[in-house]
Length: 279
Image 1 (cartoon, rainbow, N blue to C red):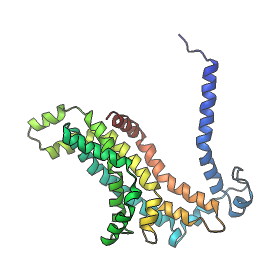
Image 2: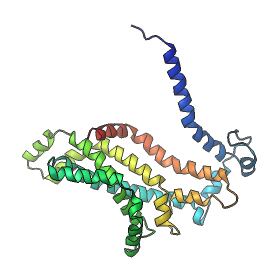
Image 3: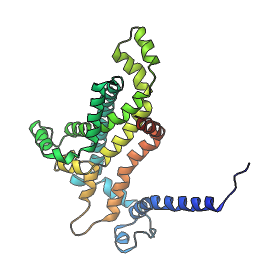
Image 4: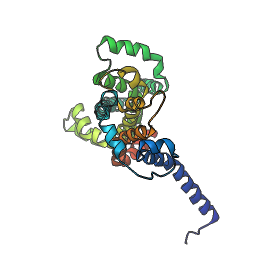
């Protein structure tokens, strides 16, 4: 039986095309403005195509210094994001596995406490956290931000890992235990590889959050040499005049690494998120 092309199918296709245009329109504006010179970006419509496309904005942005040193901001963002994601994967996977293999009251209470941590706003503890990092000498440092983001995103990480870990069969673990493997070896050699889809999900979600975070970076890194890209973008917004072509150029540069990583790991992301929601 052949599928018939009905008016309802046509309407769905039109709606899908319109939705795609709406989603891609901001990216169109980014590219168009980034390819315009300063004068043209000021006088022309943001939607209009550039009359003389140029890559001068990228050269200007990448050669900046001080609070506009985009290359340094890119390095800082990479260090903080990678460090945070690695810590979250290591600690979160171990914690989630322990919770998943303890179905009693203790495991349930631990899981609920992590879920509650997702709901509570971090702003309630921002002042004590700021004071603690300052006392420890970690304010404005990569290590301080990595510890901060690890604590903030651990509830989400454990939530995603736990749902996936609960669905894992115990057969391989029991066989390895019979052969004399320790619990650590079982987790490293058997369980963690099976958690690869959840790991991809955690890496992408937490990586996006850390990479794009502006508020915490502004509060805890203000005035330091560890400033990240989102805060650096803000430095291009002047009090009286804003060079939007330069701002959009920095935004494009900041999007490239995380977008490339998402395209690389999107299959694991979908599998892990589906598994995490089962918990």
